[in-house]
Image 1 (spheres, rainbow, N blue to C red):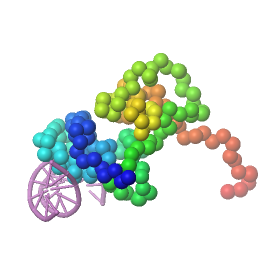
Image 2 (image 1 turned 135 degrees about the horizontal axis):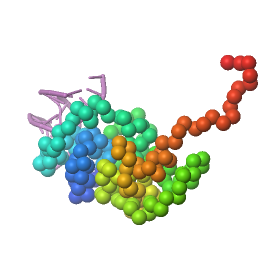
Image 3 (image 1 turned 120 degrees about the horizontal axis):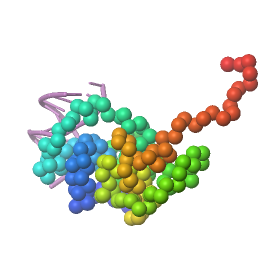
Image 4 (image 1 turned 180 degrees about the vertical axis):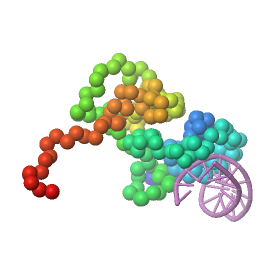
Length: 179
DNA sequence: CCCTGATTCGC
DNA sequence: GCGAATCAGG
């Protein structure tokens, strides 16, 4: 049952090429592809002769993490409870609720979008909404694919869901005269 | 110390 | 061919 992580299959290589071309760092790519270390990614990149793209490090490296921990790529390997194991073969699970029936903010408008531009991970680009739609383990799995807000991984609609303002305290005042 | 890619080299 | 270890650098 232990599906030895498929090494560099055509699909994985293709994905690697696309992500590298998109300017993602080796570590980011490694996380997204799953089952490989950033070194593996770099090694492959070199063997493929892809290195030396637009080296715009520095800005991207030191200033990372500004996107808010809520998002990142929703593909997160979750197989073991290990603190930080870098080689999780199993697959996906995502943070934000899938198609959800999230209470509270009912989004200002139904918005006639969505269904039309779903894309597979292969067609997902950096500028596209990475909101997961459907079962990640199903071949039908898609991402929203809408125009992502610059700097964020989601389109306006999904960003609202992903980044909900801190739940507003409704009623939780302690008994007066105490603290 | 965080991160980045580049290179080496045993497997 | 692969990738951990290492190197060089921001």
